[in-house]
Length: 312
Length: 256
Ligand SMILES: [Zn+2]
Image: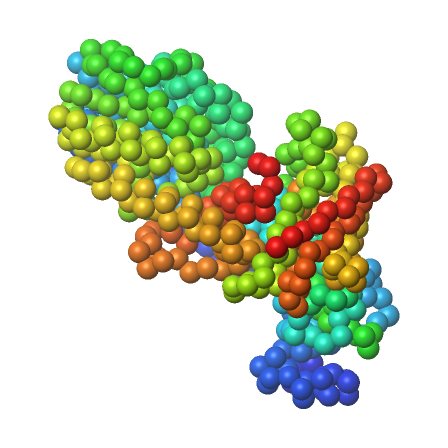
C-alpha cells in the first residue's frame, strides 16, 4: 500500500511539473510598432489553457493600446508582463473586440486601466460572462484559477478615436456575435478583424447570424482594399498580408449555411446532419469536425424551422 | 460465447448475421451502467430481456447542447414491435417517451434534455413479450433538466402553444419521412417556481383514419419538440392529434 501511494504521489508530482501555467507568450511584430500574441488553432484544452486566440497591442506615441485580453487572469497577467518587456510606455486603453470569453477574460489583469467595448459587447459580457467563465473552467481547468469577469467600463462607438496620440478607426460590424468591433490602425496599416476572420481554423458559431456575418465580411474585405492596408490580424490563426482569411471564413460559412438549408429541405434529422462527412475542401482544416458538430446544434434548428414552414 | 443464451435466444441468433448474433446477450449491461438493474426493475420487471444490436439508438457521444440532444431510435430490423420505451439512466426524470408503432415502422427521431452524462436506451417489446434493449452513452456538461426553458422568459409561446408545423417527403432519399414540430415549453417542474408542463400524448393517423403511431411523451423531451417518423410510403396527409398535462389539445394536418 505504501509503495502504491509512493507511485501515486510521483504521478501527481509529474503532472504538476508538466503544467506550470506559463502560456509562453512572446510578442510577435506584425507591423511597425504593432505586436500580436498568436494562439494555437485548437479547441480549449487543459494543455493549451485556452491560448487559442490572438491578442495584440499597438505601441502608440503616448502609450500602449491593447486589443483583446485573452482567456484567463493568468493570460492577462502574462500578457501585461510580455508587453512591458517590449515597451516601457504605460498602457492607455484595453479594447475588447466582442463578447467571447477568450477575448475578454484577461480583463481582470488590466482592472486598474480603462477597458472599452461596444455597448452590445459590454451587455453581452454582463449577461453571459459568468456562464462563459464556468465553461472555460471545465475545458481549460486550473489555468483559469482566480479568473472573474471584469466588465469594460467604457463604451465605444463607431468612428475615429484618438488614443495615446494614435488615430484609430472603429468599425462596428456584427454577425460572428451581435457586435463585432474591427479596429483599423491607419498608421501601421493593420486591420484587427477580431473573430469576423479565422485563418486556418474552422470558425465558431455559438452566437452567429450567418447572413449578417457574410455582409460584414464584404465590408471587412473592402477595408483590405484601401490604400495603406498592410496586415489583417484574424481572431484565430496567423496574420495575413491579404484578404485570404476573409475568403476562407466566407467559404466555410457559405458552405455551412447552404448545407444546413439543403439538409433541412431534404427532411434530414439532426443526427443525419451530424453524420454527414465534411467536404474534402474543409476536412483537413483544424478543428473542422468539432466546429461542424457545434455549428449543427447552433444553426440547424433555424434551417429546420424554415423547412417545416414554422414561424420563426 | 461469454454470456450463455437461452434456447429462445439461440434460435433467434441463428436467424441473424454472425456479427449481430455475437453481440446478443441476456445479462451484463453492455453500457456498464451502475443504474441498469434499477432501470430493468422500473421498466422491464419480470419480462425476458435481451441486449440486441438490432435496436439502434443514435445520439452524439458528446452533446454540445444538453437542452437539445438529438436521439434517433431505429428498431426496424426487429419484427413485430409492439412498444418502445426510451429512458436515460442518470437523468433526474428517467423516462423520456414511449411509442407504439402501429402502421408505421419502429423508427422515431426526437430531442431530449440531459442533466448529466448517461446511457440513453430504447427497450423494444416484441409480440413474444421479450424486451430487446439497445443504447448508447451520451456525455454532457449538464444543465439540461434544471435549466429553464427558453420560452419561460417570454410570453410569446402562450399565444403559440401547441402550434404545429410539419412536412412529409414523398420522394428522394427520405421518401416516406414525416417531420413535425410543436411549440411547447416542455417544463420539467425541476426549475423552482415553474410547474411541470409538458406534452403527454401525440397520435399520428393516415387519411383513412388508421393509426400510424402513438407517442407518450414525458418531461425530458426538449422544448418545442421535433419528431421524425418514417412511413412505409408517404401516402396522403397525416393527422396529428395530442394534448399536454394541462389538457390543452391540438389537431393538425401534415401535408406533403
Ligand atoms: Zn469569438
